[in-house]
Amino acid sequence: MQKLVVGNWKMYLTANQARSLAQICAAQLNDLCRENDIKLVLCPSAEAINGVVQAIADADALAVGAQDCASEQSGAFTGQVAAASLKEIGCAYVIIGHSELRVRGAESDDQLEKKLQQALAAELTPIFCIGETLQEKKADQTNHVIKEQLAPLKKAMASFKSLKKAYIAYEPVWAIGSGLVPDAPTIENVCAQLDQELQGYSDRVRYLYGGSVDADAARWLWQVPHLAGLLVGKASTDFQLLKKIVGYKQ
Ligand code: PEP
Image (cartoon, rainbow, N blue to C red; front, side):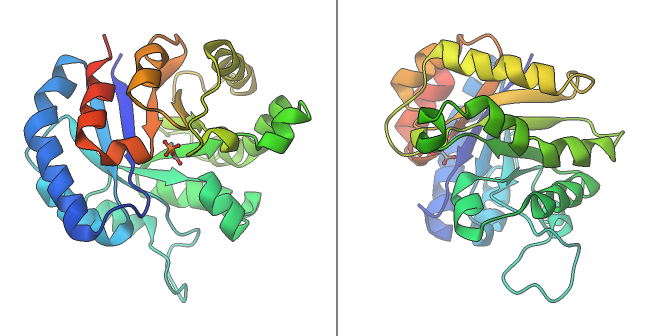
């Protein structure tokens, strides 16, 4: 089954830098991705999307995703980008609920559900992020937090029976940018919980791991049975690291 590597470029790159990196990825990673049956989804910041879409136009193993979308279809929402616009300019995926946005914007479950609805209506494949904070982990609340965080996704999916596919990225907040990665059994436990919580959607929902994925972590993360791929932040802005992450999949 095809695996996904999602590069969340956050705000690390300018529009020109993002286009250049996408050109290099298109030229040098497309064949490797095809050989390893990987779809490489590049997620630049909004202003860089057009350039990245153009840069990967001839690379069929690559795709473009957005880092967020608006919770509304259109209207007086300064600074927001509509899911339908993202689709129009060539995005196929959208990250929703990233912890950096959940924390900063204090996104409510209602907003997240609406974002998911907008993404699904625009035929973007959502990459929905969940994961506990360090405090929640220490308090042994991971399972509880994950159950709660899944609610918007469950609601959105229930109203989109024709939904083809959604990805859930397990990204413990304490692992993002920290160099720490949970061990395989911890990731497997979360995936097993997701299986339980999402009974009835199992054919349409797949799981990613994200948080401090680098080349070393990728080696063993590719062996974790439940995972359909990796969500990579900082390391995905370094071409050599990204190449290793893609190349280590057997
Ligand atoms: C992320 O924030 O989505 C992420 C995976 O970040 P990093 O790999 O830099 O920890």
